[in-house]
Image (cartoon, rainbow, N blue to C red; front, side, top):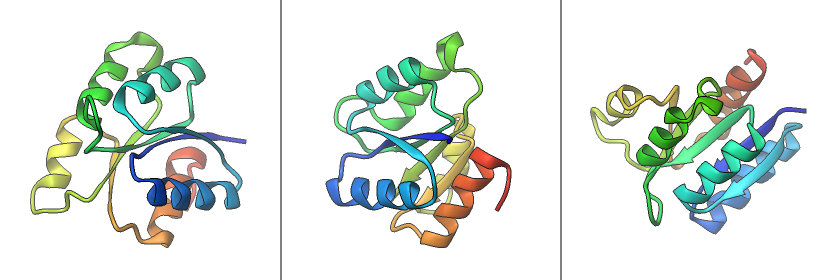
Amino acid sequence: MPQVLVVEDNDRNMKLFCDLLTASGYRTLEATTGERAVELALEHAPDLVLMDIQLPGIDGVEALGRLRADGRFASPPVLALTAQAMEGDRERFLAAGFDGYLSKPVDIGEFVAAVRRYCDGSD
């Protein structure tokens, strides 16, 4: 069963995302800060990371940079999960090294399809 690390500082969003993932057959790990996300990702090597951008402490972009700089976490996909949905934001996050981008509020069908695509290789 694939494992997804959800990095989100909003309790409601965290519950929604984890409930959707659990109902779809995924195990979840939860982090509410960028620092904790880095710790959990390096410790558990999840199959996918869903990373909020605006986090207390280090933001999602910095957390991604720290993960990619560690040789133990070179390949698992990391998706930006953010309310930053202005023109150019998607391109900016992809250029920063994210594998994909989901804007909040999330479309549930799009969310589940993206997780399946990155974890299972299917839609």
